[in-house]
Image (cartoon, rainbow, N blue to C red; front, side):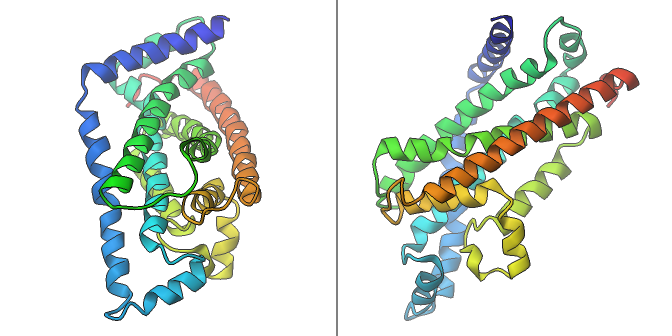
Length: 274
């Protein structure tokens, strides 16, 4: 019970700060519209004047709905990117504010402090997803298959992987004291290997092998199966289970790395260093 109180107290503090400066909502509205537009226009240009390129895309991707294919991938990428910047850099932000060392001295489980900081990121990702689906449906005119409950379920399967990756980044950033380079490498890797804007089948075999160890690859494929191809949850069960399984591995890995970093900063006394 005390651990739950700690998590809720940290989440409440962050939520008050978030609502105190609500300009973040402007980004939530604008970015879903702008970001996939570059790839959609590029796909339209590469398809050729007579749109013959679309048939090649359909052969590789299993659908001719390239706009829906792209927006599903970019939506997942933006959610992961948002989490890495907010949750992944949470401890570093507390450090730059000068509040991390004081909070670290509290008689609480330090991992609960990190978990509480992730609640705010989950709320932002949820808001981002809802706004994105609404904008893509009514502004881009994309017809998503399935229903709202399956849509919510499909984005929930990302959460173990997103949370686990956030833990890893938060721990490494606390140790290395640098968030920009780490996030840029991770999101660039995801954009290349996870099939954000193109089917992974067009990549070389060794790249497809690496992509097979990234949970977001399966999560994006499962979401496309449900929301674009009109398939059922049973049809997408392999990708769903793989995304959840690899996400669970990331959570365990994140917990282990955090424990290690926590012991290192205790020995070195480096929390106050920048």
